[in-house]
Structures are given as structure tokens and as C-alpha cells.
Image (cartoon, rainbow, N blue to C red; front, side, top):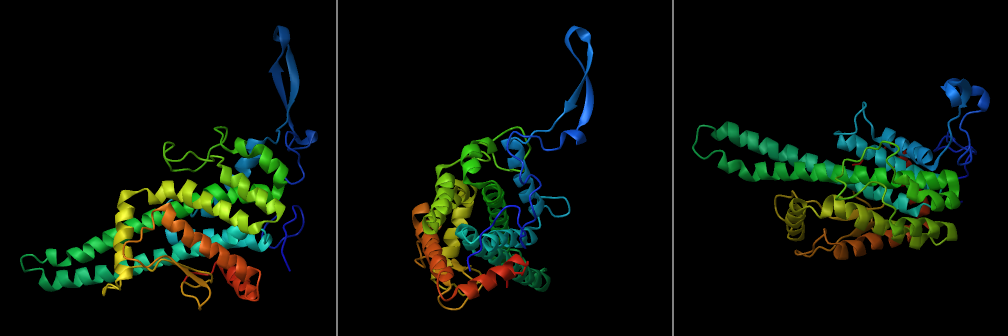
Length: 356
């Protein structure tokens, strides 16, 4: 049975939105609950007026943006704690799909974000292993000249893993801040208001958490792929919807926030070479997407990036075929006999299951 979100009806994944049923440009509170104010009128007369808060498109967008920020906020902070934040992002994407199966991009991205969590876990393991080696060598040979040089490989690997964790966490969080509120607005207000007011999202009338230089990517930019993606949902062309939103995700957001970084490109090149050659240290990370709640999945549930030594993940032309192949695989699975397995995995992720 296909799930379909209906605003205002009971739903196990989302509570009723506080502005449900209130039209744009209408008062948020009943007149009887609004405050009476005194103001200076013509000829310095004192008059009475009622302050009525009005639901504007900007106010509505802010409510969904705040919802996203609250999901990412840990002990009042939107910084650090990348693994816990990743778990929350995974769960939020999974809930979008479970609430409304038309959101195939969100279902796919719950798995993709989980894969980021696998990368964070791998980086933490690499860091711990190399730190142990470095400390053991340091203790054993501290008195010998050049002892520090003997642990340079471990030190470099630790630094590289730390940088990768930072970039993965940053890109993952800011993609979520960009695209989760888009889904929530569409869910609650429908296509007509979404289409009419998308441009109002990019406003200085309300504060947002967006730790990105405006010259790199301005918050809330209404890229064409956004409207294309959601218009395909309305028409029922879910495969095209996923493709449009995937291009928005990869080209408009992650390319600018992550893949244009020359340091990250060098680290990805090193990882690609080590993976392709099965480098004996085992410090590399396989570039794949598993459509399961675990980092490793059974055959038929995993998409792989090219294992050529010179493959360049940071190039859109090389990365998009990998992303779109995973999207097609997800589409086949959720419309075939393996759907129960995929749905069970998404329910595990929605419940906050840790990656392993």
C-alpha cells in the first residue's frame, strides 16, 4: 500500500503543523487573542489598535526552516557531534518517505546519508587505529633520533580522516537545511503555494543557520531543478522527480560545498587509488551506496562507483551516473518484490538505528 501524506490527518511520523488550515495573508491568531495597543494618530490623538500577526510566505518558510534546525540542534548547538547529527538526518529523510511514498528522493537519500554515516564511522576507526600505532611507536622508540618521522604516515592519515569527517558532516548538514524544508512546505501547503512562494524563501526577513559564504552559495536559491522535481511528483513521474532533485543535490549544493574543495579532491584521489589497488593498509573507504540500514548489504542492494584508479568522484560527469544508477535501483526495489526489505530498513533508520 502506497503511503500518502494528507495535512491535518493523523500521521505516525509528523504532528499537525501549527499553521495548518490558515491561509496565506490571514491572521495567525483569532482577533480576540490579539493585544490591544495604543498609538499616536492624526493631530497627536491617542488611538487604540489591535496588533494582528499575519501568516506571510516568509513566516511559513521560517517555520519549516526552524523545524530542520531543531532536528540538527544538539544541546543547543548546530556545530560538532557529526555522527549524532547524521543519525538524526537519516531518520528525518526516512520519515519523509514513510509518510509519503511519492518522496522517492528522500527515501533514497536516507540511505545515502546513512552511507555518509558509514564514512564517518570508517574515518573514526581509521583515526583510532593510526593513533594507536603512532602512540605505540612513539613510546617504544622515543629515545631514538628520527622516531617522529617513523609515524608520519599515521599522522597524515589521521589528519586526512579528520578533514574528511569535517567536510562530510558540513555537506550533509547543509544539504539537509536546504532540502528538508522544501519537502515539508510541499507536504503541508501543496504544489500551488509551493510554486507561488518558492522565491519568498530567500529572504532577509528571518534568520537562518547557513554557515556558507554567499559568494559560494546563497541560502534558499530557487534553482530550476527544485520546481522540476516537485512538479514531477504532482504529475506522478517519480523517477524524473528523483533525477531532478538528485541533480539539485549533487550539482547545486554538494558540488559547491564539498567537491570544489581542492584539498578534498586530493584526499578523494588518494582514497580512490588505495581502493582500486586494494592498498594493504586497508585505510581506504569503498565508494558505494547500500540500500539497507547497514553499511554492508546483500547482493542486489548495492550500487558502486567506478573502481578505476583514476576515477574522479568530485567531477559531476563521473559522479552523476553513479547517483542516478542508485536512484534507478531504488525505484525498482520499492516497486518490486523487495519493497518489504527496503521499507523495513527505512523504518529502522527512522527509529534512529545506528549505522554498523
